[in-house]
Image (tube, helix red, strand yellow):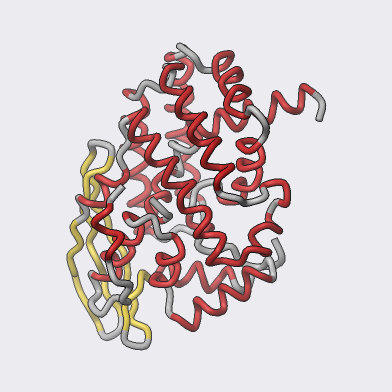
Length: 305
């Protein structure tokens, strides 16, 4: 690979890791794998009450159980269809719920390269180290871009636009105060994340085909520790505690009409109180978040990736 191309790749990855993963899409990380030893013993039982459609998924996130999350987020019949679609390369749900989901293979390639942490740090020192003003400006730009993106993206419902908009503003406030320009924090961040990418055993060079070969459950089992490491480093190095947000979550039932319900979600995220709405649906006696089910179903009808 030409030196210029490699430099560009590492620069883009460094930006994604330092800023892009934080803004504007990090709220979606709450929908993906995310230390909470007490949650690992939770028995997987589909929700029998509307509010538990959120509770069971929160427990799987705290348990770092991406495969369990996928099993409880959709009805069993749909889950089976999704597994088959994974092997065909047609669906990548629930990765679709994660930030920058289509860039995961390329991210793994860069992080799995020999001496990746050194290359990333070299780029970081040139582009971001001690550049507080430049980073703050990038953060403000990303907040604006993120807000506009959410408002225009047809995949978001009105409830989700309001929810994610609040989270983006909270993340913006966090990022402006976080020590993102401190190289002493960036070094362990990159080193630890690169090691986690290698440990995943996912062949990033194979691209999306690696996920098809592994299948949904195995892919999620291997990715979960990687994302858990990312979230742990964001907490340790930069003070962004996703687990604390999940533990602070209070869910209440606003209304129920037959097999549909409206839930209210309240939690503290990055020092900001979030108040949001989420629809739930009952299918074959169990409750699920309607937006997750809808996106999972739509992924089955998408063309080859």
